[in-house]
Image 1 (cartoon, rainbow, N blue to C red):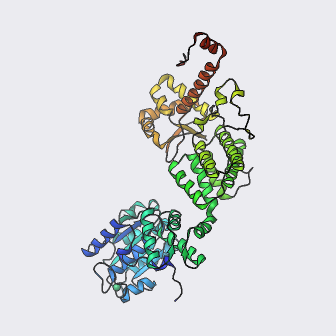
Image 2 (cartoon, rainbow, N blue to C red):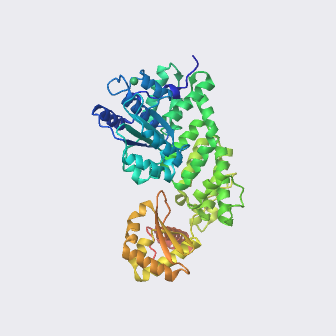
Image 3 (cartoon, protein in one colour):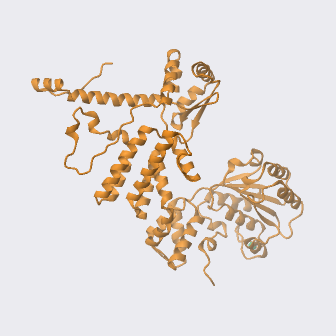
Length: 526
Ligand SMILES: [Zn+2]
């Protein structure tokens, strides 16, 4: 017998083989035991985590001729036919390729006939969210008055695309992604049962690349086994996964800009594990930064030759960056690149560089604070030290927004101070579009109160030419700062500069020497 792919061989055949979805399994088992079967079930959750397998097991268990407890026997005629996809009572329909009204009408016709040799007639519709609106409407009619022997099991990755009228008639089960540790355990037990030699790190790496998806995980292992002829070792795994290097690099760059620390930590260890060339990564980052600068500068997306995927990637990032930030990023990257050329401790240079990118505001150059630039220049270094410039200016858009907030503050300081935690997204036609990042929901809620929102609208109509309406969005995942925060940051920075200048001021130094004094604190009187 030839090699049967693990992904197929270990497709669960009974409830007890389903990985991790304990609550769902228990509820379905109870339903069978107590004979309380609904007419429609909805299985939702990410791809490849067992929705269809569970649907099949459930269908088998319901129609099995000699069930073992609540589990299907997998041996009787009915079970075997479901496994082979030849059952006349259990239909598996792919919603993506049968999405039209005609297919659903056909289904409604077939629903009228009794099952041929089983207790239930079961329709498993995968990717059900792909159905057209008309198809959903037709389906709804059957769901409203289903024959007693009919059961629907819908599976979907996008529950929000299913009409509420359908949702309300389904018993819903949300399948979860499988945590890495659980998946590692599962994979190891399979490899041990199969007597396949493996290295733990290889399994860990594969699991981390599978995003909680059993199916992806097993097919990756199948690939490695096919490549090595039967072993799962780290080097081969790295080699095979290396094909997706660029994906990791893109992701890391994006996460740095979004300051998503948790993902960054994981990606750094991924890059280390894969043994990526750090210089290559920095080169890619430099070119991304340049592209973003060009896009910002010329605001002409046709000016840079980009593929569609790249365009989407950069479009997503453009909202989070301004020129000042990009210049600073570029300089840190250049320094990383030079250091990587001259020193051998690649990993440290790269990782510390990434931390710098995440903390640009904390590593402002000493020279920026000092009136005497020569003192801070390291003459021994052959490499010119290039340090990032701080972001010290408001963009024109920010300025316009701040002017509006200031104006508003003259009469309604409370509204203005809350609105200042938002940012101006755009003025589109006659609409002023304002955003709040998720964590500013408190301020957002205050603004959304009726009286306040009306006031903002009226003020905006007076202040901005041609604006007739105001749209305020709470942006999920956004980390953009409100103009109030930006202004505070810039002022803090300016104060710091001023204080440092004062410390270095020759007159102040003279006083220090003359009186043998030290400066303890500088207070700025504004
Ligand atoms: Zn059976």
